[in-house]
Length: 309
Image 1 (spheres, rainbow, N blue to C red):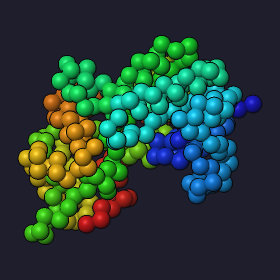
Image 2 (tube, rainbow, N blue to C red; image 1 turned 45 degrees about the horizontal axis):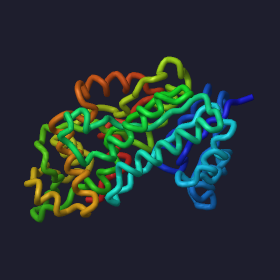
Image 3 (cartoon, rainbow, N blue to C red; image 1 turned 90 degrees about the vertical axis):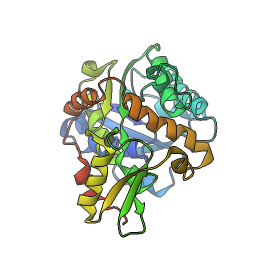
């Protein structure tokens, strides 16, 4: 009888990628059956999963009973939290993450894979105070390590999909496009094709949990400078995309009030400490070698997902 893998948030980028990786893996597809959770199983994305043979059930992170019901009988649970910028980001990350972990323990789930991030507050020696979207996930990771279940962790890099949203280049007014930020052009970010590749790291853990138990896989294809990202955008689009370093206050004016402090500190953290802290590049390189399947480089992502320029 196959073991049950429960994917919390199966219609999201991370969860959806795990579904595709397990279904497409000859070994794991035989070893695991999948139950996906969503807040509304009647929605189109949830129904697409049903058509693929996935059991889809309702679960809400604010409803402990729904989590326990969804996790019942699971051999492995994958869980992640959605970042909410409403002035209480850290509190949401901790309370939601703990709720997921507690539900897994309550129904005696033996294995938990959690989507975490580095503790930027600790890495910066306490200098950065607005990194709740990172620190909250890290606090939950530490909490999970104290619980009576076996755990492993993924820490996704910066999403390539952001280049179609909050980090998209904009017309500069002279026929070129500005990929603008306030950090130095040699500041680096580890990048991940979230929807395409997240599952390849989770698949590696599922295939050999003992090997990765207690470890954090730093999930990114590679580390890119902001200048290299602009160059890749130019190459893929055939347009001239220029990295433009703005004064921080000018850049901040483009962001929503409840988000700007978090995002500004996050970028300063990238510049001064590295996304994963010390030896970010080495952590990314090792983790990329663990992935179960070929990872997507930025050039390939931008070719498959053209920028709207």
